[in-house]
Length: 94
Image (cartoon, rainbow, N blue to C red; front, side, top):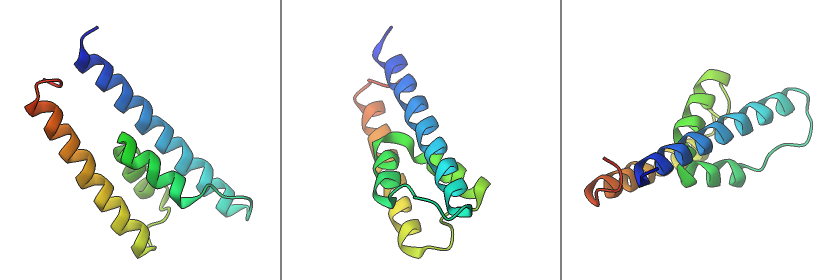
């Protein structure tokens, strides 16, 4: 398996984890139960799971009214795009 396949598997895994964490947090928020820390949600987004984060935010209408959360999510998106660009330029992801 070449490097690009490992990177794609990693990104799919991180995005799946991110999506599932948002789903769990949304369900817990509805039931007024213990919640997943926002810091945890952002960390997974910065680690490559930003597409899953954004998809879950839109699909579940979760954290969409919190301006600070949205700003950090946009920063994570930019960070992820820069990382992908760097991988493409360094020919690790082609």
